[in-house]
Length: 118
Image 1: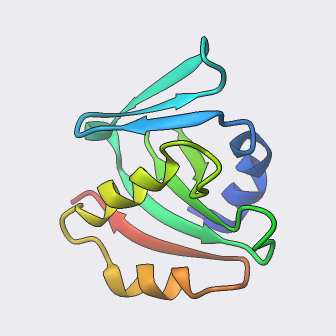
Image 2: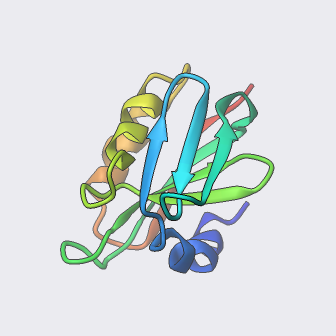
């Protein structure tokens, strides 16, 4: 998987996200109040964090979540619920906290693999 290429492919769509909700079973992405997609966390295969050099005036941290299809969600306080994804991901068993800290310090376009289902 080449996370940088996936970032380029999905960054436009990720900017269309209206809000997100996450609980212990599912991630719901709201494109509008009427249109949403549900992703069951039991199907989550891999997690990466993509960083860019576009901050601080544009989102510069994106969760890349590999389900059957990859989805990318900005970690941005302007998107309601998106910061709760971080809380959930930090609780995954064998989550790579060191790489997470490295990613949060990055100011370049990079991809950091943080977790993979065993």
